[in-house]
Figure 1 (spheres, rainbow, N blue to C red):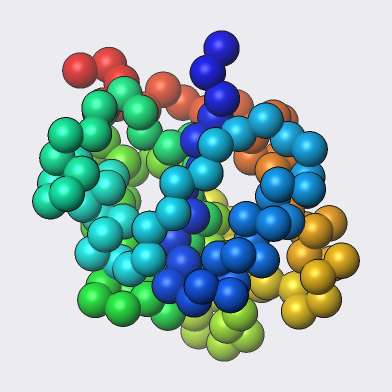
Figure 2: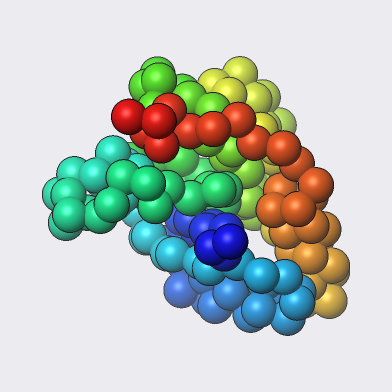
Length: 150
């Protein structure tokens, strides 16, 4: 069985490195692709732009989405993913430093599956990453993605 794929959407290189390091230490089996802005994640998921040659069956199992992104905001990314039948059921976990209650409310109203504030302490971040991975990659049952069936 192929490894599950996580799509990390993170524009901050330090946060990207921290996230990759934390998931690497989790001991879980997965692959991670990284995109760095809202426009790029949409190209990746909708197979446009530089991702037009990406195979449609290689969709991620999980999207870890920062909210404060250049070009297209994380909230707008959620809106567009939920508006399209092919990505509507794709699990999206907002992983952000934002402690704005309005960001959390808007994220859930637009259809995110979970909202996680990035722990500041690296040890806490390791624990949170492992728990995220265990739940979303091993315990959670996913409906088949529509693009897989076409």
